[in-house]
Picture (cartoon, rainbow, N blue to C red):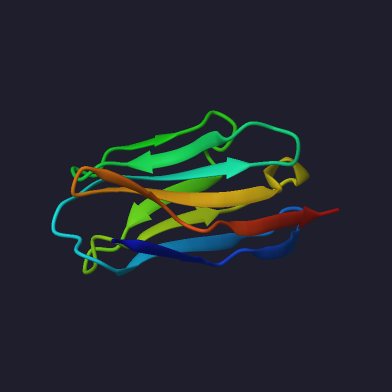
Length: 117
């Protein structure tokens, strides 16, 4: 069983930056495929924010293009980052990491990001 551990959330002012991290803390990670970040704001549905595949191609939601970057650790393929810049109150949400490992989807526990005015 793979356990994903997220970190990096917190409270930041409008225009600030945060970097989220997600790594597989246990379990076999012999085959890691798509890595992604989702978020869920209060009263809203879960939203795909960004994803990256083994070849390096990335996909970003229109609402974060130009502000967020998803990347993968070169040394540890199970570690994925979400660099967030120029944050706005609309980015306030719980952010979840999702990893496709050995053909199974795993989720992190979620990390709160709050953007204050």
